[in-house]
Image (cartoon, rainbow, N blue to C red):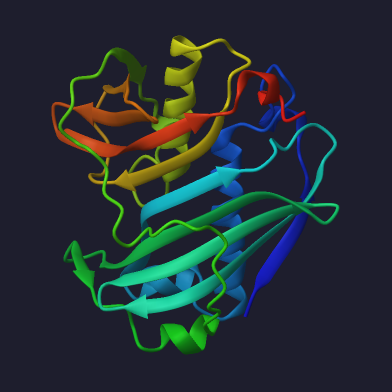
Amino acid sequence: MKIDFEKNIGLFELDSNLTLRLKPLLNYFQEVVGIHSDTRGCGLKWLMDQGKAWVLHRIGIHIHRLPGFGDELKISTWYRGGNGFRAYRDFEILSKGEKIVSANSLWLFIDLNRKKILQVPEEADNWYTVEKDKALDLDIDTWRPNLNFEPETVKTIGLRPSDYDPLGHVNNALYFDFLENLTSLAFDDKRRVQQVVMQFNKEILKGMDTVKIGMRKTEDHYEYKLFSHEGIHAAGNFLLFPEQDSLGV
């Protein structure tokens, strides 16, 4: 079962180039997952009553064209099934029939009280039904980030009470906001991320004042990691749009 919702991009979701930021893009994905779960009777409130939650562990995103001001979007998602402790979900965003964003992701099913990863419930196939279509040609199951590198560029990010979600940790979408803060520091403001893969390693819990995000250039991409005195919170790699395509034109 594929499910979607339609929306127009809000002005507050855009950058100075009138193109969509990464944080609201991730919020769209989270929203459509919530809609899918709610329509199947296994939404956030139901899960929290059971002391359980789905937690995003890895996501890969390819932006074919940057969504911009005035674009009407259809955001779609579907469940690709589970295997042991891992579940898979894909996403697409269309604008007037044009595919502009593709993504796939790996999720973990968590016991909130015991802070323990559980096997994917057999019932999940019935909750969502299984669709085998792949939105993105990325093996999110075997991909691994490089955690052991010395960043060439580092930015310190201050944390605020509003950065925390109902589960008491910094929401995943904000990690992409932190990444955009870093790329804005390192590159011209008109350069935008075209492809990004991220693995979430460690929660950013209340009580922390700052985190750092650093990056370095390799032969074929940029590596980055989000870290603090508590360890590495997330890591991955990204590519930028070519300069002439930075604004999606």
